[in-house]
Length: 121
Image (tube, rainbow, N blue to C red; front, side, top):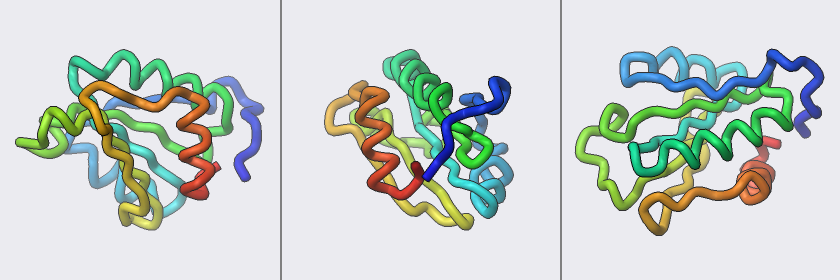
């Protein structure tokens, strides 16, 4: 179970590019959980807001929260499937969540439940 955050600088939500994926997602997930959320201009603000609330609550030295533009991550990804989240561990995608309606994203409370179900928290 993840510890409550003890160091105020431990928590960040970082935006990455496609070129960063291998090092920031696959390689980093060899040591810790990495949750990457694909966004677009329609969903970006709410996604970042909710992720920051999770990040502030938990010690993210063992969890990395990343965002990436969906069109940068996977060209031609359908816009009605944005936002979506992928949880990586040991270099492999372990879990995914894909919106049922464009722009819908879980609240902080729902994210916490989802991450607990996935074994991250």
